[in-house]
Structures are given as structure tokens and as C-alpha cells.
Amino acid sequence: MFNYSKRPKSWEKYVKDIISRRLLFNDIMSKMVKAFYLYHRQKHLKPLATFVHDYTENFHQKFKEISVPKLPQNVIDLWGEYGEGNAKKIKSNFDSSSASEINEEYRQLLALKRYSDFVELYRIFDNSLENFLWQSVESIYRKIRILLNEDVSDLQDNSRIALVGNLFKAFEIVSKYQKEFRKYFDKFVEPVVLKRIETAEIENISILSVLYRQFIYSDSFIIGNAAKIAINRVKEIESNFRNNICNGLRKFAKENDVEIKIEFDEKSYRCIILIDYNNTIETFQLVELIYNKLFDLIGQPDYNSIKYLLLNTKYPTFNVVLQVYGKSINSTWYIFKAYNLRERMVD
Image (cartoon, rainbow, N blue to C red; front, side, top):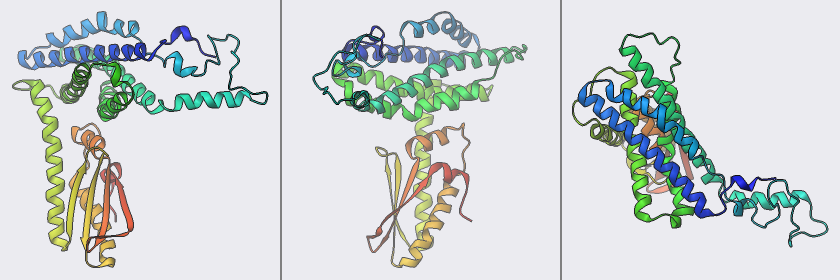
């Protein structure tokens, strides 16, 4: 059923292969960050053209040399029942005369289920970064030709897909992916090494989210250290967003004679809003008012904006808890999804 010659023989080898991929991504992303930095500093296309050439001639081939690893043999065949490839199945001590093929498959599925969340996050994260790199290289090359007044009718424009579909997707799940990796595999990696890899992933993805977006939508140059400005820009947008929510809801509380407490729960990816009022009927009416207020405060950002990226990543859910004199009403939470708050208000 499984070809073990294509699988690592141990968890150590599996983790080593993943780390090799992560280091490769960080190396290439760092080179792209440097290319954008020099592009803005020198106000010249040459650094980007050099990066495009190096990626096409060298970096792209490395992904074929360091392929995405498959789960190791000892998790695929935990009880040693399947053997190598399509070889005859080894009889298991767990088998009984009445055991069926279906039961054997169930046992195998249970062995895989434990790692299913990690495998899915790893697949999305790795695919998103690899797709972003080749698509962004193509779009940078296309933009260079446009700036040189050359014909680009033969080139497909993948710039938006690279940004929103792949780079933003990597941004959205990188923290979750890192958490799942540490959950199972941190014992196989030196803590200092793993921390360095994680920090580089978050910084590179954050910086490129700003610099790549700026490049495809603008012909202007950034004055100063573009990389530092980009990372500070991400922090500034998130800080402004949180302040805007807090200030707007405090004003709302005064206007409607209610008490509001706001908690940004980053670990659970949500914003919790506690509304305390002394009249049950009017409290329920406040749900519609608070929804519309959040709609106004969020402001319908574009899907390709950093603001929408941070909203969708950090606080995709707003939980509203109604209270009367500090006590919850029927233990009910009203859950507002950020994508709904962006699209429409309650009429």
C-alpha cells in the first residue's frame, strides 16, 4: 500500500527534512527582502533583476532537491502490518480470525489522525510560500518590463494571487503552524535554532507583505530603511486598529449609557466585548447597535490591504457577551465574524 523507500525511516529524519525546507524558504525570502531594500535605497531596478535571475537559475532548483517530506514509516505502519510497498502484508498479533481489512484500515487512520492538524497546516504553509516565490518572481519580472516600457502581453499577471492567495495565507497561519510543529517536534531541534527560524519566518513574511504589495501597486520609492519601515508599518496598523476599536466602543458606551470591557485575545484569535446594562430588553437591542458600530469602526478594508490581513489573522471573530449587573444572560455569546462585519451592517 505504501512505498517506504520514499519515506523517512525516523521522526528525526522527517523533522530534519522539514527544517531544511524552512531554512531554504527563509534564505530566499531574506534575499528578496534585501533586493527590495536595495531597490528602494538605490532607486534602481538592478537589485530586483538580480534576484529574479538568481531565483530562476539557482533557488528554484533547490526546491526539487529538498522536497516536502512524507510522514515517516513508523507512523504509517505503526504496528508493522503492511510491509514495503505492495509486499504481502505481515500478519499482526492484533489480528483475529474475524478481523477485517476495514478494521486494519481504521487502526492505521487512528495512527495518522494525531498528526492531521500539523500535516494540513504544514501543507498549506509550505505550498503558500513556494507558490508565492515563483509567482512573485514572475510578477516582479513583468513589472520590470513594464517600467522599461516593454511589451508584457505574453506574460500572465499573477501579482494579486501571489500576494493575497499565497503570501497573505502564509501570514495568516504561520503562528498556528509554528505552534503545531513545536507541539510534536521541538525535542528534535535545538531551542535556539528553532526560535531563530520562527522569528525569521514571521519577520520575512511580514516585511514582504508590505514591500511586495507596495511594489505591485506603486511606482514610488520608500525613503529610509525599507525593511524596518515595513515591519514597523505592520505593527502600526495593528496598534491603530486596536486603538480605533477601543476608542470607538468607549464613545459608544457613553452615548448608550452602558459599560463596555474589551479584551483582545490573541491566543484564541478573537476580540471579546462585554456589555453590561441594567435592562434586559434594551441590552438585547444593543446587539444590533454594537454590530453596526463595529461595522463602522472596521471600515470595510480592501482584501489586499494590510489592515484586512491583520483583521483576518489576529481577530477573525468578535464575541459579544451581554450582562445585566455583571451577570451573563443565559450564558449566551454573540459571535460576529470579521468577514461579515466587513461586508454589511444590520438594517
